[in-house]
Length: 475
Image (cartoon, rainbow, N blue to C red):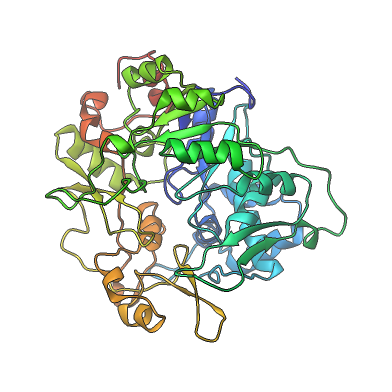
């Protein structure tokens, strides 16, 4: 298989650093589509460098970045040959905002370039990058950095990525690109935009880049039709994600109702009509509960090109989740002692978010002090003086209210940014000897992963691919 042949399996683009370059490369080596998560890659790169860059992979990839001065500056500010001292905090990058200086844009470009470059080494299979539409402010620079590394596919969900096809067209030709900046509760005033100009980073315009294929992640027929017919450019297919998928889920259509566990209830209106998708004439992949050969065959029978699978890949040897968390979850899952709850309020985005619950969870009963120092899920709002400000319902309540937010929106919110870094072994140490706690997300498939494990508590990405293609009975 090459980068232009539609894959049967797309590996899910799970949270910051879970779908890292090692996992994506392992899947692509199997002839399927490996996908790196593009979320928060700039701080992921900075922390890997501060931990000493084990194996030298970051520095090796940085040598190929077409802006060597930017790579040199990143090393000068963040690389620690022996790693941080025990308990020393990570230094932070400045948080994203509407307008960034050239150096900060280049850090974001560099991080995406490094992850995609490493994922593409040693094979000719397709590599994609997954970004969240809702995490607006880094996306233009992230996309451009990934394209400089030759990314083959861009996948985007958690919002309506209507402008992205046109952005990809512009960036492939090194032309300026822009996105409408969503401003909370904005009812009047001129629209705000995010802008990115590749020409600001090169003295001489480089040769045109290959435009990656674009696969929006959708959960309704109406969104698929909108993007296919009224998007800003070419859409190359869809990932159709059901509410059993891990991470963020689309909210139910219509009035939200909750079950006795506080989970959103989904109904017939939330089921995508696949015959209508077929009428659009574009390939599609089914996601959510797709991690078994039976679902793969059913998807193909319904006209799908294949499936996107997250949960099985999230706990394989090559994923970025720490070994301790993987072993703990899988050992409990093998005994049927895990649960997945769709939390209606945990995510600052307002989207339902899947949370793993198991007896070995090291964070049970622990409370985290509210603090926002990464800021990827901050949203823009207009200050009384007309300027743009930023707030997050997971930040300290008094700060959020002072910025005009409603206190009720802070109830039950969790800091996903810091938790996702903890999931991959990059947790921030805090004053007093504490450390940021993890928060795992998985699809509902995790409850039934014991049948796949067949008594084992570890497996590889290749094992998952063989299983899904029906070449192995399980692992």
